[in-house]
Length: 484
Image (cartoon, rainbow, N blue to C red; front, side):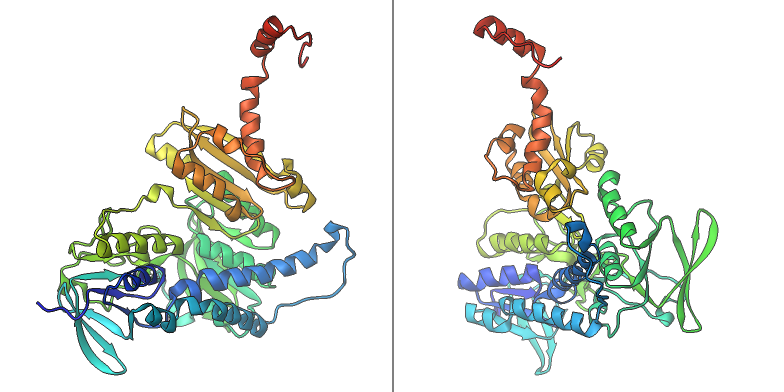
């Protein structure tokens, strides 16, 4: 068969863009097919706009507590203006969008087609665009169509109306009362942001803690942050019905067997994600999938070896940086012909509340589930001088090691935790021992010293103990007694 291209990439999010850029620059005849816009959900509906909104909310929160920093309260009542907020978000998106633009990718040598893709077989696609319908083919194909909000099947929800991460960044006013369904990262971050922006927020989750993938002690910092910002938290809520009552939206739910009703102006649904696969006609290509995601093996191959599924659409870890890494795996396998697979045991992530919560490697919950023995080392940010100076002392670092003192996991709840995680990422990925993580000289005062505080307190008894003092007294003649 004579193919029209060397490689077809379906979807212009982080995974597809990474693969396409690499392929084009190495001389591959690659075509990228995008249905909506280059950059994917992260740029338009996820990571970028949410962080801009969180920043705006945090500034308002800081103004409300300005007297904590030795400054007089201004007395100025600052309320959020939705039009200004959305304009700022769009400006941020615009500033970033060039990196993902058609112009940039065509300049690299890629062909870009806007349209809807359907599989004819495992080598051919039919593309429906404004120019009509065309067929393209390639020996290798990567699917990177991303994901969309998963909407729970609750009676009355569709009729009543709701927001998701795809619509919340285009609202015309800040809701006076916001009901958030879901206690994962999206629900937690949006609850925190809108509470700071002036909404009376109620978060309902069917779990017994927020951020279920985190250890309970780390998730508690997010729970405290939301509670302090005014968010009402309802755990163990089983949603039964949603309805519109005299212009107000109501959620009927049960908690511990008792029936309750919570009312608000708007509902935000943040109950998970589902892969964008419904239009692809995967069965025509013999690609195995369930109702939500495409099945892949450890090398990200689908049931058809010439086709890979990368990014959110495979349902493995739904983070932009994971999608980018999977795009790199696809580049090595499909373009360079090199062996490569993903190691999901070392995926880092951050939830952007205040304090932020960041994780790499094993936490206690995952280690216990896997039956892996570990030692735990902790230090509080209240013991860090920079945190004290900036009045951001809520949080801690938790380092897990194996029996040889190699770092196998780091969790941080604290100011700028996502940035502070970097030493932990290197330690976990490179198998560093505690001594290597402890040994570099750090500038003072910095938040990074939290690592030294935790490790120093762990190692101190090994050096400063009666046995060492006795040894030095005998061989060095030291005359002190040590602590009494």
